[in-house]
Amino acid sequence: MAWRGSADVKDRIFGALVYIMPLASAFKFGTFLIAQFPILSYLAIPLLPMALVNSIPFGNLILFFVLFLAVVRNPKISHFIRFNTMQAILIDILVFLVGLVFSLLMRGTGGGLLTETLFNVIFLGTLAACIYSVIQSLSGKYAEIPTISDAAYMQVRY
Image (cartoon, rainbow, N blue to C red):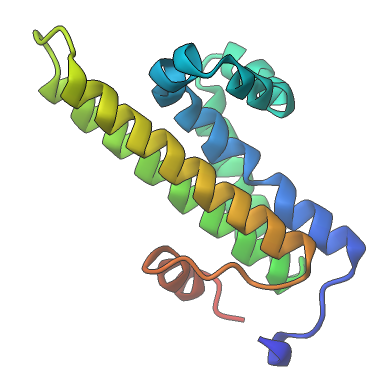
């Protein structure tokens, strides 16, 4: 993606920071895995600023609109930051929708092995996508996640 220019250190850091948002949303799916592997609870340390946002009524919705309107739709901000912000928003929306579907489908069922497995898959998938994206962002490269990156490119054209 050299035609978009290179990302300086500030762009790399800000491009990586936005992935805290989807990781904080997916953290609730990691309860079963964290109970089995307590070392994973240290992943919550970088997510503490999101706890502040979640304490505000409609904090996630406000954060979504601020990031979308002030960052993604602002052509004065570099394309690298806007792309990573849009990709993090899309991952967060995907995690929210999966959580919504699970809350509707799992109503009345006590859980079980299938529920634990699906929760672990969602948590580990989101964790892997966020870690990959953060590493790519810190190295100054665009993180290419199938379908999600395509949707992010459609929103952030220039």
